[in-house]
Image (cartoon, rainbow, N blue to C red; front, side, top):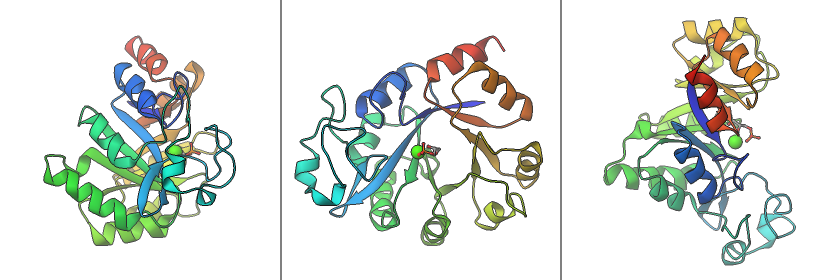
Length: 230
Ligand code: G3P
Ligand code: CA
C-alpha cells in the first residue's frame, strides 16, 4: 500500500507546513497530502477557513490580507505556505496530493501546475482531489492530463460509477464508511482506492486485507514500519 502523509506528517509536526511535509518525506512517505484554499488569487495551504485551530490568528481567512496571513504562526514558527512553495520544497522527491477546499482554486491551480510541468515536473506527480466533484470535472475537462481523486464519505448507490464517469484516477474513501463491495467495484472499474485517515495498526491490517491501494496517515513512520513486517 502507498503511504500518503496526511497534511504532511500531522502527528509529528504542525499540519500543512513545510516542516510537516519534510518530516513525511524523511519518514519515507511516497506521497504527501495538502489542503489548499484561494486567497487574493493565490493558493494557500490551509485546512480550515478559520484561523483559530492551526495558527495564532483568529477569525475567517477573508478578514485578513494575504500579507497578514503570512505573518501568522502556523506552528513551530512556520508560515502558512503558498502551494508553489510546497511544490518547490518537495522538488519531485515525492508525489503531491492537493485537496481543493474551496470552489475557486482551479484557474490558479492549472496555471501553477503547468508552470511546474514546464520545468520538469510530470502531470502524474500530482493528484488533485476534492469533495467538490464539479470542480474536479471542470479541471479534468480543461486539462485532461491532470490526475483527479474523487473524495467520498459514503457508499453511493452506483458504488464507484460516478468516479469512473469523471475519468478519475482514484476514489478516496473515508475509513469510517468504506465497504468491501465499494472497494471491489472501484477496482473492477480500474480506479485506485485510497483511504483516509488511518492511524493505527488494526486499521492498517484491515485495509490491507481489503486490498486498497494506499492510506492517508498522520503517522507515516509508523505505517511504513508496520508494512515492513506485515
Ligand atoms: O484527502 C483525505 C482527507 O484529507 C480528507 O479529509 O478533512 O482531512 O481534509 P480532511
Ligand atoms: Ca485533506
